[in-house]
Image (cartoon, rainbow, N blue to C red; front, top):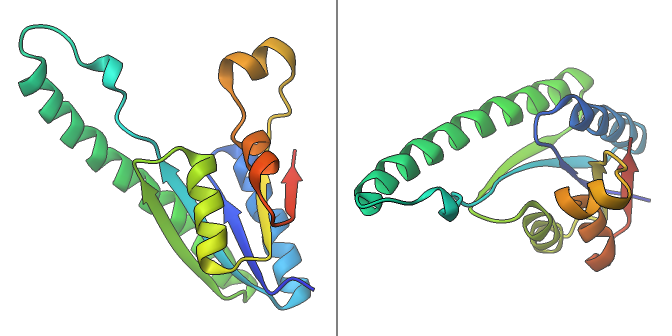
Length: 149
């Protein structure tokens, strides 16, 4: 039924549950996987003061370097789990995008037929204040989504 799964992860404990569920499903179906992690844009509100242009450049470079390093750790861990399970997997790090936007674009570009992602299941004010990338993906995707809690 499903041949290519897109598994979104941010490296959190909750996202690891999504990775585990996706791996189990992919192994059972003989499907391939693409793991994706997304680094959001550098927060512009952090720029301020008389030397903002100079300081922001240094901060931006440090932010990007740390984001790349963290993404590599997250994706290497996911790929190692797939290798151990005998599941074919690729990894993708998307930079400077909102996670939902990147997940939606990548799922279409790669022709994925299932998106697997975790959700905290926040409701009410918590969801309003913190947003929900999973809810946004669910709202705009044409691809089935497996949500893991």
